[in-house]
Length: 182
Image (tube, rainbow, N blue to C red; front, side):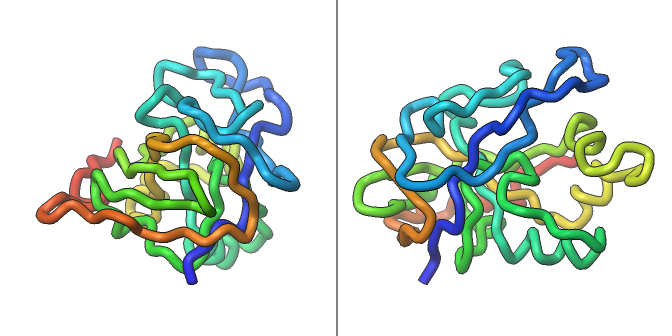
């Protein structure tokens, strides 16, 4: 059964060498039921709103299976939120999700897949700076990107909630079909 392993929100804004000067990529799991609104997880923030957040990028989902791959590759634990994700999932191939696909999470919340994540230099600095040179290319080449989601029906979700694919638009491309590496 596909399920939500964790709901994540920003833990702390951190200084960053990018143009904004700070980043909200440092996310961690939130305990209990969490409110999901049109702009994502209640109390989460995005420091760079030009490239993150908004209605079409309200939430970011990343699979536990993909995180486990990166744990083996990087040789360290990568807890929920490490990839800047709001949802850590299990049992659903998020990279095979179709643009326009809809998921119901828990009893009420419905989300729609809008686009793939495009890795950036902030993400590379977060992962390891100089120790992970070429991270953006490496992450892109593995095609373990995860999708951005739009909130269709707000509500509350929590770790353990079932994820049900309620709609797959016929003929729509997957997030990997539309991805263009930076």
